Image (cartoon, rainbow, N blue to C red; front, side, top):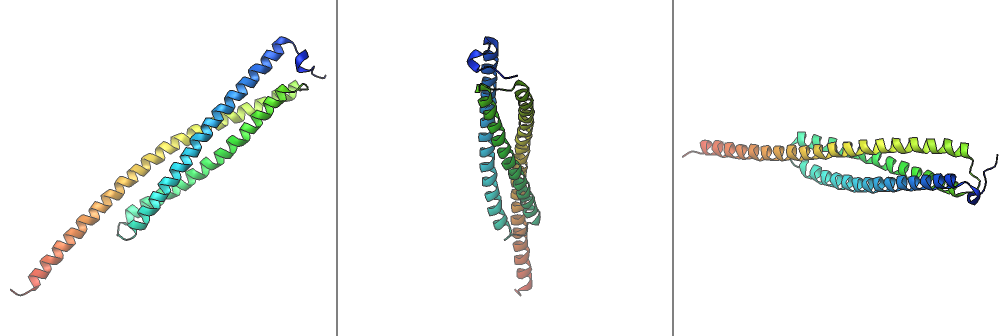
Length: 183
């Protein structure tokens, strides 16, 4: 059975198609916001990774192996997170393309309702899954930023412990030197 041209469709069908297009456009807009958030997350990850790298390079001059390990593990977690966000960005782009194709299908005169219903169901499921992934990414980002703050605190603690140890060693060295020298 061939679908009549859009102009010949009953008013209710035209309204349904219009509403469906509006819903799809809203989903595309929501995916665009998620895409922007993910791009910002990538920039933050890059900035933190660069800062961690500088701290790691500076830290190698000291003997604070725990701080270096902490920074190193944070960097690994940042890279894993960055990879996840990048993959999600690709998923968003593909999903937006599928949603645009559905809009074009709705605007066509020869829309196969059963095919469209099947395709729309799949796109809705993919959209919901992408939203779930996005929420997980945002939660992981918050956890990762708290881990970075803790890592900064740990690094500062180790630096001050190193300074205190160095000061104690200097005092001890000076004391031993003064004892060794004859009066």
